Image 1 (tube, rainbow, N blue to C red):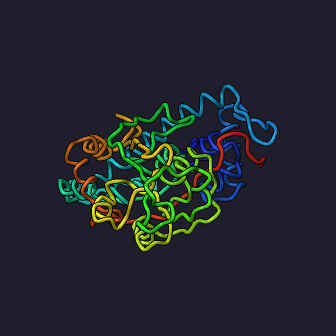
Image 2 (tube, rainbow, N blue to C red; image 1 turned 45 degrees about the vertical axis):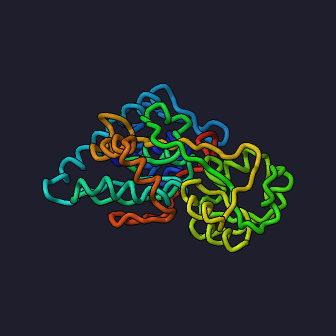
Image 3 (cartoon, one colour; image 1 turned 90 degrees about the vertical axis):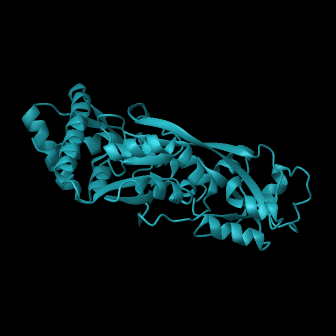
Length: 328
């Protein structure tokens, strides 16, 4: 029994498909099948069988999934412990929704100022993906909504910020008359979107879901800061954090648009795998995120302020469903 075999099995069990596990590992389906077959032979159990378009774990398979996950966690802790040499750089990966990622630069600078040997990489993901990134150890800590789904029970999520989300536009915008705007009128307007791709857990995606609208006219930008600048130029409406535009609103370069249910209040959480499973630095950052220093750093920072200690990472999609999936 090897770690590679256990990893192949655990992924197949969690994702519901040998095909999905192979894609996640970057290997062939045959390689995953061989690994699972070796476990079946050694343990004398089928572990899982086909069921409809997915797979179903046997009783032994369910027990192995839990135990194998613990074994893989311990192996990862052992690897990090060996590599954690005093005086040498240590690495930590953060997963965050696009909205949060654009605003936590000052928080990261404040935290890493205490530890010159800590290197941080940030990966943007949708709110629905955060739990999976933590469980698969693609991330050491996640910032965004509290993780939901089957893995949420194994994750420690701590709220650290209540972010007010508002809609703004240039003073000359047709909807900037100071009266409440109906959802129907909002649906007809042009919306300027940051890179969140209408993530329904945050920002514009959350607002549209609350209002029950699907705007037909949207323009995407590579950053929220770019969308805000376009709104100030009169190009449309933008959903933004209130503190990110406080100066523009004060100068009347932007005005708030009164929509039902706004301002929205998003509660941001710092989530880890919990004590005993999480990287010590991740637990330390989780504690720091709830401190007044962290709140002050975020509240006074501007959108898109990038930490000098961060190396950006590309977005990675883990899966589209944890239920029944296409067969192998």
